[in-house]
Image (tube, rainbow, N blue to C red; front, top):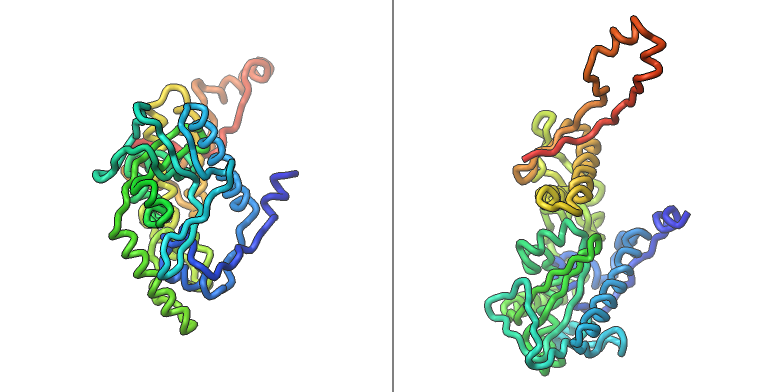
Length: 345
């Protein structure tokens, strides 16, 4: 019952007259639409509740840090502080907190950029992606995988309020499927900040004229953006298909399929949760293959083939059934196997 209600529930995103640090990583066309108050595609109940769940994960991380003896200032407990990330143009945001790490306490990170340095006070940002994205973050880090979150962190580091504490941040990423943690150290990158502010100034200039940027994305964002209907109308997605085997990189689901391929590889190496990860990735492959009416696909050197329905027979059951029908009915049970995906590398 609840699942059906959530699926049907929709909420139209609120329009903001200022730039929010959480969205400045989007393309300038998106920001133009947002600033002009153009009609965005509403969040479905599923997506909105998924975003709401992120608050729960944020609270969980803060509670864990405090239980480990690390103070977190300006967190959800006291009420997150609003910071001014830039005056020209105006950008505001609400960081997840400030870490207060006492001297002598060990604080090891999984990865840190070359300019990062541990200090007593550091910005804290928390995010909780699915395990597909989590594994890619472990390998390629926040800047490459979650640019919007990375740009948000940079804008926070550029704010006067955060600069008074530190020029470094710790991003704690929680796998919302397995609760695994990945911790990354990030330093202020003035080039990213300046490039972002230049983009926002272009957006301001365009929107003052009531115009929208001519930029149009040509990657996975094209199919998931809230303003895709304004950029691309109702044009149909052209799917390049080579025979019966799909080339995964050419599909709009390429990013998700790459994640599924990585999960499958990781699942083969794990002993405890590997079977679940492999099953999840196999289901993702099967969904896309069925959607396109193909026989299989190849993505990142991982090959997924749809295996037709059939009976698994290890002897001549037909002959047995003909000659000894009574015995056959007593000792043999037939189960029709549904079509499934065989994955290999």
